[in-house]
Length: 444
Ligand code: PMP
Image (cartoon, rainbow, N blue to C red; front, side, top):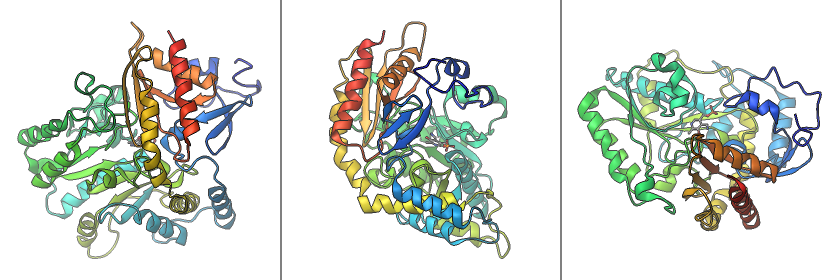
């Protein structure tokens, strides 16, 4: 462990089996964070790190906001935990009501979970329960998309399309799942600003799957409106609209996984409003409570909710839930976060900053190894040419180099991803991308 990366030699790094991490590599040179405020982390060795990724796409209002900290503290003191099975507490209802103020269309029934992965699996189960309630229990097939990321539950990795996340479990995934092609094309749409003009026809692949399996077997299609974790894939113009139209034509439910796009990142509360396409079910997590405590949610349409609930004369309506559904501390953080989003009009701020962000990230075009730059709202991706024989290594080196220079970025494969808190300003946007440019130039 180098002195530069950690000044706490007594810290034992052996017990924590880290998620999605090259553990052994990490332990050679750990990157440890100690404090956070606003746009910045402070590393364990006292360096200020500009947060270009809002943690993991989640701290949309900036770190350790006073109002959210106060709400969490007050709730922890007043009541740490209470069940929401057959009883309740006001803060869970308040959180759901505030979330529903922002969800699109009539998606006003909010099922609370602890994470995006749980929200995805919950949404898949709601889709099946809905069709069964409608007398169409044979609709059990799901359609996901290549390179889709829907968390790590068995449902999520089944509909997800990220190969390494599925490989070890391939014999045990949900049996009836197909995948649409992903929409990224460096050949037809490299360096697109905003939505690419090319690619709407890829939605028609759903017609092919309908012909293959018959619509009467298909429960739902799930997509991220903008795919984040697999490397920032922006939907081509008209693509989501076409997918919606095909779903409508065949009675297939449409699920938007808005774990990343939710809560202002595109300049509207959800991508659904930004694109003007309303799904039947919508998953969220991360920004819902600024990641101050674990929380996710599914928003369901009136038709779905009413069909499931209406099919049960009395007794429990939906056999599903988590001990921590509506956990008081997560819910209190959600209430304070949503109040803050509204008071500071952070979604409008993101919309205002988006053109500046776009211009700044596209200045990376022409830097060595940069083969694509793409963006929408306050989401950006920069794809690097993989180093010969060592895929992923170049972006990893840029990530490490940026951290050394005081800027946090994310990488997946050879793609750098950017998703700053919505409170970022123009100077910080410049600092973010000028540091990235410098590090890219210095990287082999
Ligand atoms: N869906 C999407 C679109 C995500 O980006 C993520 C997390 N990056 C998840 C689901 C899973 O969320 P969690 O890690 O909270 O389980």
